[in-house]
Amino acid sequence: MKHVTSVMCFMLCVSCCMIYDTIIIGAGPAGFTAAIYAARREMKTLIISKDTGGQLILASSIENYPGFKKIDSFELTSKMEDHVKDLGVEIKISEVQTIKKDGDNFVLYTNNEEFTARTIIIAMGLSPRRLAIKGEDEFSGKGVSYCSNCDGPLFRNKVVAVIGGGNSALDAAEVLSKIASKVYLVHRSEEFKAFEALVNKVKSVENIEMVLNSDIKEIFGSTKVEKIKVLKNDEEREIDVDGVFIEVGRIAHTD
Image (cartoon, rainbow, N blue to C red):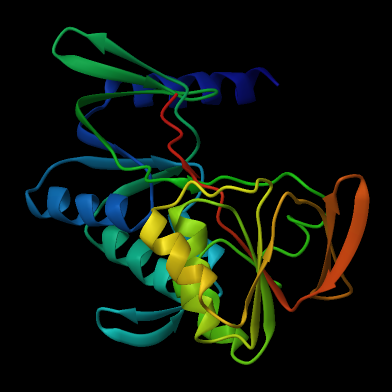
């Protein structure tokens, strides 16, 4: 036990003493790209991220990414990760909790380690805001999506629901109306927060049905999404759908 403790202390000491030229927080496309160019400048570079891929991992496949007509999101993420590793970039799967200034340098603290860098690049991007309802996590990637442009083509001639009332939700509904046979637009209010021109455009589309003053309460299915439950004026309604696109905003986790 003493040996294990001494080894951990040694590792912590090494990470404290090493000074990186730059530490990049985030391992999505932006973080990987920053790492590539930092490494090509011969900068000692470390990526710290709680996962790799960023929002790419929310899509089952990616279409029209430069150089790839269509590619599995996991494969694309792996290619990016291999690229930066080949350039000597280190990747640490962890989450930065605190950053403090120490003279001319910065000290980054994770749950159990600390790292020192001359510069920091924050490339965490945005994370989709979740509904936190039953079935959302269970069917993520199995009918639940946060990107209509990414996953929309998978629902050609199927029935989908879009959740939200802002520009992103109405834009998603308009895009999906050209792909899906029917689109339910579920919004908890009577009024939309989107631009008036976009609202009017969506209202004129025949295969979009507005489900207003309604809250989505649950997503059902066996191995994939099959229906949703919405609540309006204490009355429950179940709607058969093949997919659910959640468009209720994005969060920057910079706290």
